Length: 271
Image 1 (tube, helix red, strand yellow):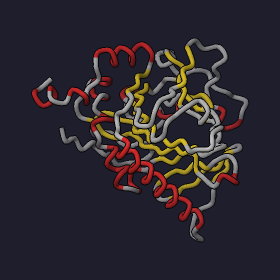
Image 2 (tube, rainbow, N blue to C red):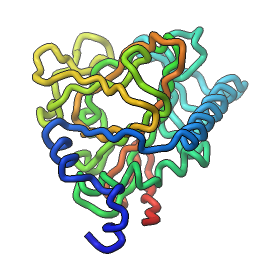
Image 3 (cartoon, rainbow, N blue to C red):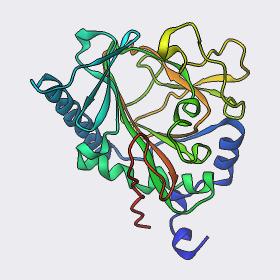
Image 4 (cartoon, rainbow, N blue to C red):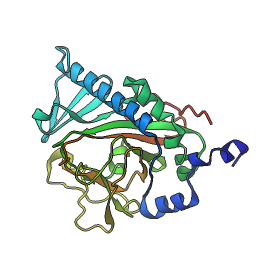
């Protein structure tokens, strides 16, 4: 570790965090971002959400693609996953998102997100694999148990070198549909999916016979969870009267292509 890194220890993973990641498949830090910063991020998320709604309402908007019971749409250079219920008038997820707002763009390069990844994958220079904005309005649908690995393997150049950093923009509880993981499933490879539940069922993990402890990541806004590409994770319905918003950046070694995009975006390190 050089002199510059010695003055930026908060941007590295600790030995305990590395052990947690290796043994459980994830670790969490609270209060990574300040309340003022979070206000700006939430405002950015809502600006992007409105951009998507406006683009979807335009006469030139492409048609939605229906897959099983869910709707997908290509808008503004992103893949939009709409909420299951039409009356919610919200997307549940969009990928990528950082190109639509400078505040989200700056998050991609924030060492508080990508810094620890260097120690988890063993390289100092990183690039962006994927970035995503999840918005779960009151009544928002759950996201079934799944792994990223079986999905990403068809587009990633080094899927085993990808680590995701999930940032809560709002306080997260079981009531508002917080992030869940099943600890220690990351080292079990690609797990059994549902072959008889349509196209999307093949992306969802059948957890009936797997070993591991479900863990609800209940935490205040500003918390970041780093997680393995193969850990089983998901979320439940938002039963509260407030939104739960999340930004996720997935990082990989420098020079590799982004998810479903031919170019690459190396991280602009300012350390």
